[in-house]
Image 1 (cartoon, helix red, strand yellow):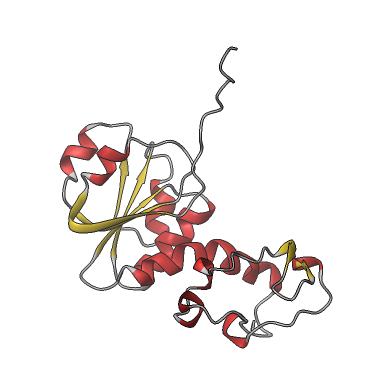
Image 2 (cartoon, helix red, strand yellow):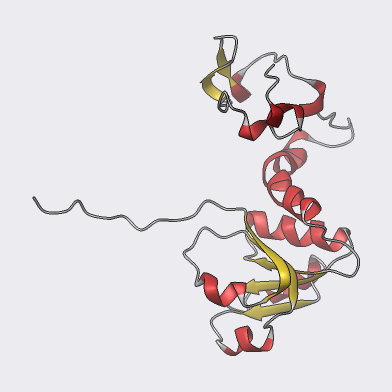
Length: 187
């Protein structure tokens, strides 16, 4: 176990030794990591959670990936009673983001390209659902949110979304960013 300042502070992802990848990585001890294909694993209890016997593994699995991807920034940036959270996208990450933010007590708005998933947004306890294809949405919601959780991998007009934040608001991107393919320059 590393003892650098980041590891001691519980921010192992910033370890000065670099990250240890879950699948076929190399641990600090030189051993190969086997990830989800292992029969056994030795891990610090800080990184382990017990799944209750009543909860089927296929139900728990999304909480261990998409769940922590959305829950962690919501907790880190203070989503809760009295805060307004926008969740961009209502796919796999987005629906968990909406459910967690609402469960934490935040007022949640879903920002999606259209209103096609509005019923789902409300079923997951969002109080509002807005279509971002409608440019009026950005004017109407300007300066409204404490936190925007972006769960889509599409290229977004970030200036438009940043304009939806209150002063000192935060926008977190929880999905990998899509970069357009570029052709190599001609010689």
